[in-house]
Length: 292
Length: 253
Ligand SMILES: Nc1ncnc2c1ncn2[C@@H]1O[C@H](COP(=O)(O)OP(=O)(O)OP(=O)(O)O)[C@@H](O)[C@H]1O
Ligand SMILES: [Mg+2]
Image (tube, rainbow over all chains, first blue to last red; front, side, top):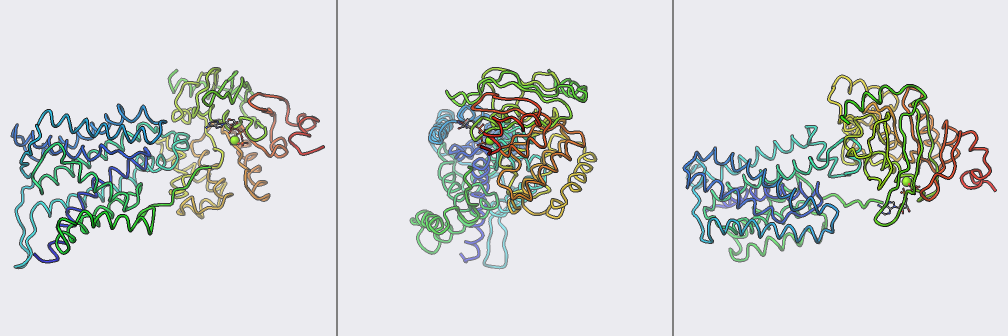
C-alpha cells in the first residue's frame, strides 16, 4: 500500500476520533466535567443499529437516524440522573460517577447481547473506489470522511451563528453571567449532552462499519483515544477537538504502517505527552483564566 | 404568578411608586450568614445607592435579587409581585437587568455578540436593532470595536460593554455592582455621567459602590450596609452630611 492510502485511512479513523472528541470537549467546556461514559455511547449506538438492521431487518439509514435520536436522549438522561445532582460536588465525585455510568452501560449491553463479538453489517451502501492503478479507497473510508466533514462544518456554523450556539459559548465562559442574560443553563447543558451523544452515535456506526466487530467494550478504546485527541487539541476547544482527532488518527495509522503495529498506541500517547510538555493547554487550548 | 402577569404589574408601577422591594432577606453561604435581615425599597425613577465596606454583603444582595442565590428567608418583590423563587434566567425578562461586579463580559465573544446576548430574551429583531443603535450612540467606542473580542478591550471599555449589554434587554430597573471599580479617574467620571444619563432616560438604578462620595452625589436615596445589616438609610444628601458616614466612607477624620 502506498503512503497516500495510509494517510487517507488515517484521516478517516481520525475523523471518527474527532466526532467523539467533540462530545468530550463540548461537555467539558460547558459542564466543566470529563464524561468518561461518553465512549460507551458509541457502543450503544452500534448495538442499536445492529439490533435494528440485523435483528429486525429495518432500513440501515433509518436505523442510523433512530440510533442518533436515541443516543441523544440517552445523553440527556445520563446528565439528568447521574451528573446534575453533582453540579456542586468535587470533580473527583463526578469523575467516579462517570466511570460508574460507563460500567453500567457496558454491563447492560453485556446482559442483553452477551460478551461475544457480534459481526456488524456495514451501513455504507457504496463499494471500493479505485483511483489510478495503485490507490484503492474503501466505501467506508469515503463515507466516514464525508460525513464527518459535513458534521464538523454544520456544528461550527451552529455554534457560531445561532442564538443557541452563542448561549453555549456564553455558558462555557461564565454560567452566572449567562443566567443574567436570561440563558437557561440547565437547558444549555442538556443540549450539549444531546449533541455530543448524537455525534458519538454517528461515530459508533461509522467505526463499526469500518471495523465490523461489536461487543460491550467496543467503545472503551476509541473513547480513550478520542479523549486523548480532545486534550491534544486543547480540551474545551471545538476546532481543537477536530484537529486533534484527525491528527491522532493519522499518527496512529502511519506509525502502524511504518514503525510498529504493536507500538502504535504507545507512539500516539508519547506524542500526546510531548505536546503537553511543550504546550500544557494542548494545540488550540486557551490559557485557563482563574476567576478572582 | 405567570411571567406576563408580573410584567404587567411592573409596567403598572408609576413614577415614585415602589418598583423593587427587598423584605427582611437572610442569605447564607453554608453556615455563615452573610445577609442578616436586609430590607429596602427602590421607587421608579430613583437612583438608589447601596454603600458599604469590603465584605459587607453588597454583591450578595445583588445576586439574591437577580436569583443567582436564594435567600433562606425573606422576599423580593418586583412591581409588588413575588420573584423570590423565580430562577435567575427568568428574571431578566421581567424587566430587571444587572451589570455584575467585575463586569463579566464574555471575553471570547465579540462586542457585538456580547450586546446581542444582552437582548437574548427578546426575539423582536427590529426592537433589538433599534436598541443596539441607541447603545452604540451612547457608547461610540463599542461601535468602533464591535467586531473585536471583548477580552481585548480595556477595563473601562469592558465596563461600558457590560452596561450596554444590560441596557439591551430594555430593563425597567438596572442593578450595577461597583461599576467604577478599578477604573481611572477619567473613566470613573464617565461611568457616573452615564448612570445619570441612563436614569434620566427613564431607567431606575440600584447602584452598589465603594466610591461612596460619587455614589451619594449621584443618588436620590442611599442605604449603608454593614456586615449584612442596613446600618443607616436616608436621603443621599443627608447621608453625605452624616458624621458617621463621613468618617467611615468618605475618608474624613
Ligand atoms: N461564594 C461564597 N462562599 C462563602 N462566602 C462568601 C461567598 N461569597 C461571599 N462570601 C462572604 O459573604 C460576605 C459578603 O460578601 P459580598 O461579596 O457580598 O461582599 P461585598 O460587599 O460585595 O464586598 P466587596 O466590596 O469586596 O465586593 C463576605 O464575608 C464574603 O466573604
Ligand atoms: Mg461585591
